[in-house]
Length: 104
Image 1 (cartoon, rainbow, N blue to C red):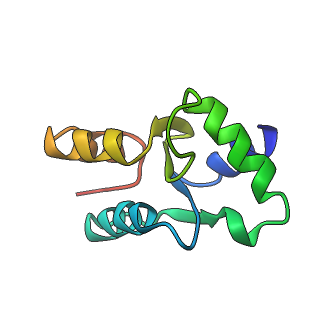
Image 2 (tube, rainbow, N blue to C red):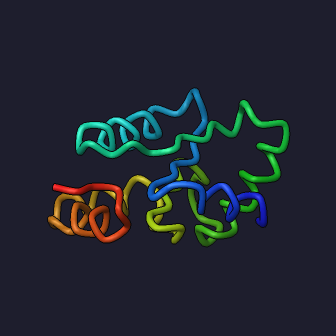
C-alpha cells in the first residue's frame, strides 16, 4: 500500500493499469483526450505489481477489478465506473483543474 501511495503522489493524475485491460485503455485515453498528462503505471510491468494490485483491490472495497485505479491529487477516485460517471456529470474536469492537471 505504501508503494501505491508513493506512486500516486508523483503526479496530479496517476492511473494504475494492466496492459491487457481494455477499460484501462479507455480511461487513459479519456485522460489524454482531456489534455491530462497522467502517469500510467502498468502493474504487469512492475516486479511488485501483484502486491500493488492486491492493495488497490482492498482500497477499492474488494469488489470488482483493481484496475484501472485512478488517483487525482493523490486521492483515490476509483475505477472506470466512477471516472466515467464524474465525466458524464461534468465534475471530472473541475477535479482535474483543482489538482493542477488542467489549466484551461
